[in-house]
Length: 271
Image (tube, rainbow, N blue to C red; front, top):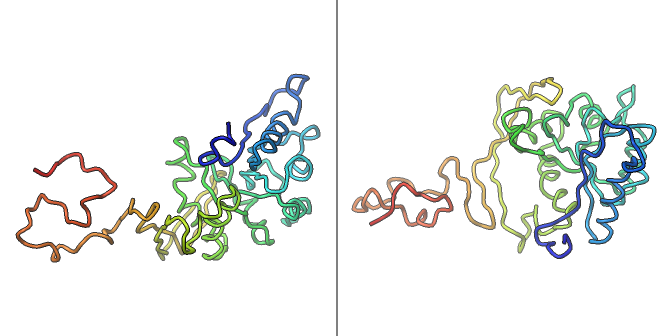
């Protein structure tokens, strides 16, 4: 099924498998992960794993060193259940070994899966996430996550450079799902464009452990294009100035450049 619809299906995911109950013959420790990897092999797609370690039967090092393939993705890498850094705040050796063998580490903020106490020492020790993502859903959009821009701003606040934050929010996610035509502005690529601004001030960003950090910068989106069409224009950058509209034009007519706006205006139709 996945292979037959690879224009919309980009991988296989497993999540929330047998997180608390004892393992048994019907629910062996690695059943979900191994089945997902087998499916990925069959359809030649990467696997994303949302994982809860339960050592000794199911440990995190075993996941990233033995069960996942190069190119497979572990999401929620900075969640509290993953021993990413040791007691000295240094990145564990098996993390670097897994990255060397091609495991992709995704931030995957989520409602409970991003903790500064793991992320900040890892980034300081040279281990940023391979990709930045939100895991945004109805349960966290008004909570810890809020938006992709907030998640990116948190990475800025953790001393990742702006260039690196943009790169790991665009190019590397596209590469992870094997869609290199996305996430780039090279000639001939899909014209998915976000025009961002960097606001200066005093800002606070919280994590999933109810800790906050202060920052002096925050990202804001001014304009978004999808496949070359404007879908978000916060400040009216693409609209004609009022003085450019002919005075004889009826006030209820849309300006020519807005006549095909992607946002439906259902409250009025032109006569």
